[in-house]
Image (cartoon, rainbow over all chains, first blue to last red; front, side, top):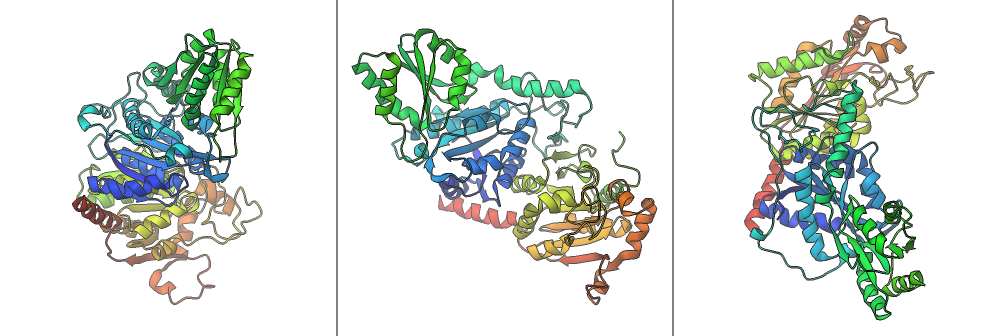
Length: 357
Length: 261
C-alpha cells in the first residue's frame, strides 16, 4: 500500500517469511521479487531499483544486516530512499537464530563507517508492522534516506488482528522529482530532488565525496564537510518531524520507563500492576529508536525519581537514555538475554517497586 | 576535463573502443545507457566522465546494482565497467550469478592483472611468480581464467581481447551490447604504473608488445597443450548464443501472477 514495487532479499531466520509472502503477493500487483545470492547483492539490487524511481525494500536479520552495512553507508551517502527490515534475533554472529533479541539498536545507528544519521522504527504489534512500514517508505521518500524497520522475532512471529484502512485513508509520500533543467541532486538544505536514471538527467551517483551535481570531488575539505554535515543535518534538524513515540503520564510519574518492541508489551501490564501498588509510572515507548526522542526522555526525567530501561540485550537504549538525562536521575537497566523468554511484567514491576524504595 | 588515467593506461583504449562501438551502432548519445561501476581505475571510465547516467557503487557490487536497474528498466542498455579485482575478486560471486541468470547486461572487465588503484597488490588474475607489492618475492597462486568461468556460468556472449587489439575489442563490444542476454568482454590491459614497473616492463610499449607476442587465437589454443598455453593470453570469441534472459523469464512470472490475482 506504500507503493513498493521491488523486493530483493536473501533467506534468513526469522525474516524469510517476508520474502516468501512478497514473492506470492508483489507480482500480483505487477511488482518484482528476486532472491539474490547474498545480502550485499540484495541491498545492491534495491539501491539500483531505487535509482530507476521505484520504491524498493529488503528484509533480513542480524547477520544479514551486518553484511549490508557497507551498502547502507552507500545508500546514506548517495541519499537513496529504501526500506530495510531487520527482524532482530539473539546475537552476536549466528547466535540463537530462532530466538528473540533486541541487540541491533546501536548497529542501526552506527553500523556503517563514517558520518551519517539514520532513521529506525520499532514496531511493537502486528498493526505497527503494517503502519510503520508505510511510515518507513514515506520517511525514505521524504528525506531521501534508507529507513530501518527494527522489528524483533517475537513481534514478527506474532499473530494479531489488524485493521487495513482503505487506501484513501493512507498517506503515501513520493520523492521530489527534479525539473528538466535541474542539475543539483545532492546535499541540499531542503532535500534535493531525485532524478531517475534513463530520464535524460545524466546523473552521476557515487559513494565518493561529491558536490551537489553528484560529481566525485574528494580534494576539497570544505566539500566533504558540507556533504557529511548535510547528511547528518537533514535527519538531526528534522528530528521533531520524524520522531514518534507513545507517551504516558510523563508529567506526573514517580518512576519512568523507556521501552520498545516486544519488551514494551510487558510494560503495559507492569504499569497497571504498579498503579495497584500506588506507584505512578510514566513511560515513553519508542516508535522511532533513531532519531532518539531525547527531549521527551529529558522531560520525563524532570518529574520522576528513576528511569528504567528494559531491553533484550546487554544495554543499548540504556546508553541513549543516560545520555539524554545527563545525570538528572538514575537510569536502571533491566536486561534479559537468552531469547526464549521476554522480560516479564512481574520482573518489570519488581524493578519499578525497587526503584521507588 | 582531463581524464584521471596514467600515461599508457589501457583504460583509455577501452574507453575509446567503447565510444566508437556505441557510435558505430548508431547511437548519437548515451541516453539509452546506464553505467554501473565499482571501485578501481577502470570504474572511473564511466564515472563521472561520460555524459550519461552512472552509478559508481562500492567495491565489487556494481553487478547487483545493475541487476536492480535492469529489472525495473529493461528497455535501457546497462553496462558495467570494472577491473579484475572488482569484477573477479571481491565481486566474483555476483559475476557468476549474473551470468547464470542470463541477466541482460554487458560487463566489460578491464584486466590489468593487478590491484592498480591501491598501488599494485596481487590480484586473482596475476600470473604465477609475479612480483607485486603484496608478493614481493613473487606470487604463489594460480590466476583465474575469468572468461572461461563466465562461459561455464551461462553467459550468452563472452570474449577476450587485449588493448593491443583495439579493432577486435571494439567489434566485441558492439556484439556484447547488442547481445540479448549476459554479455562479457575481458580486455587485457597494460598498467605500467602498478603492474609493469615491478614485473620488469620498461614501459607500456613493451607491455603492448608482450600482449601481441603472447596473444593466441582461441581456435589455435584449442589445439595446444596446457604447458604451451602457460602465460599466453587466449583471445577471441568464446561463446555467442541466445537464451531467454532473466528479464524475460521474470516478467513471464509477473504477468502470470497478475492474472492469478
